[in-house]
Image (tube, rainbow, N blue to C red; front, side):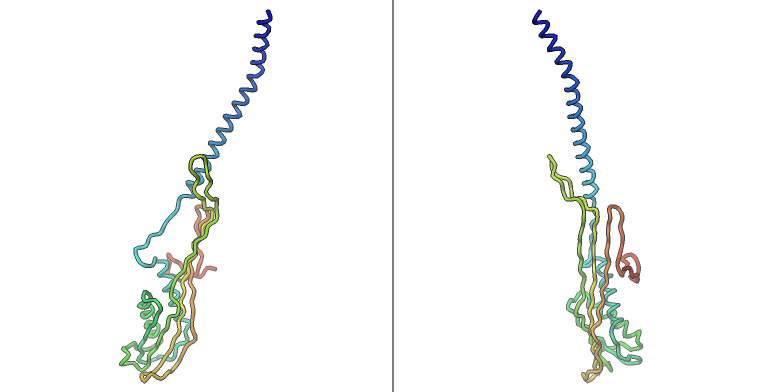
Length: 225
């Protein structure tokens, strides 16, 4: 009789405990599901953040860098004080710190001289020699980003997620012009003229914006602040 009563009590206690056990199991299952969901979400976000585009160039400078430098040269040439050149035979001599941009600077300077009415000729036939000095010709770039850093997990880690990415590229040119006659006597000198071109690419998630004073996909004549 006592055994039956004990068995009955154990059975009643087991029945009372069953709901609590089931509740605990549901909670644990829910926690596991939440953990899995959170992990999947982080991995998904990481996969989105991992996606990127890398521009590859087959030339020493990318097309955007070439545009920045060429536009800076053209604008600096316009800023120089040129002497009167109408009908004058002129030789143009260029001295640049880097050899890569010297040919373009030479051609651009000669085109500018022709537009002012001069005849471009060799030095031995020139009535005036224009010496163009390039103190600065080059580009700079700066990368910055804002987002979620890599998060360690039980297995591996999530990739870094960049919410905002900014690529700033700039071109610089600083020119000085000197003029002398065929005998070497100084005739004129222009104060230095500088130009700064820029092209910024701002990416916000999947949206991409362009800011700058040159247009990499256009003719380089835009001005966006």
